[in-house]
Image 1: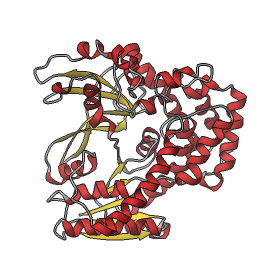
Image 2: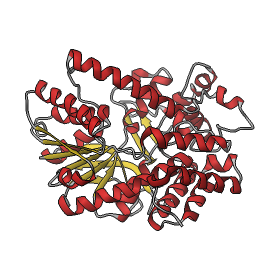
Image 3: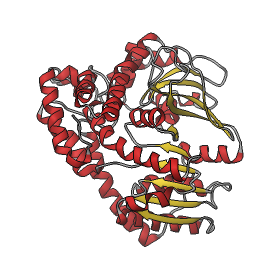
Length: 439
């Protein structure tokens, strides 16, 4: 068994996913191939994972591959490939994605999934992932590619529509959705044995049903507590609670993400909304700086005191690998093309997030049917941007980048068309060689 991790310089995430595999008897004796373009970061990951491997009994083997010239070797004969790359990193690309829009009056919170930040991130990442796909088609054509990199729907959708690689998009927001909601409203006693149905698109998949262990619908009790939650100035998940109030359903990803997926909350003419909804502007750059600093301290501590025991996480990757390898059933929320209209009122070419069954035959998406019309409408405002960004990547036409930005709900609510085009042009120039050439 060979498990290849692309972007292994993401040490904390590589540690979690590969550490999870080391907890599974059918996976722990694998070759774990670490690939990145940054040798120093691969070495940090190797040191931590090697210590974990020894602590877990010395099973398996860690191999390291650095640079594009060694990419095929990293992928050769892989059974599973985990993708966690960030093209351009925090500095310079994330900084560019935030600072240039800010000059034009466009504020963001996360900027990695939708909005102008998500668009630019997709355009610089898709060519790299397309190169991965070409290599995989040659040296590991039967491998399962598990994408964790954002913007999830754009990248996964491109891979599934325009490459021959068997791809599934994975996020961790589905696993924690109902847990977060029930804790928000003080209904922790309903967590055990709860039943849920979640479907939509990544980061805006809707909690369509939530029932307790006896099959009782919990939404009426939840809705009775929404106003009290929103009125508390200390609470931070207010945007999603507003979704319940105005659209009838809670969604998967955090309020700081969802604050920028619509035209409602980050508005220059209504600055009081930022405080009312506790919206953390510039959250992702701040998070990057803090994470970089925290990792330096944690790495030094690990070197001094040794690696702590790893507890298997709720990340889907190891559970999928175990299920396929052992032919045991497992259910995930996966990102797949809406082939055969799994969600009947979203486009067939959209990348949707739906329940999927996993076993020895691989991953089988499940039919959901129609979303409530208002939920499908909200999803479509995001899908429009996703499909146009993919089209820009596929055709190399700058007009499609303009159109994606013009149809982005937050961008369009703040800027006029001429300003949007100027902003896009400046972002393209600033990203330089991190982007392909557009005409």
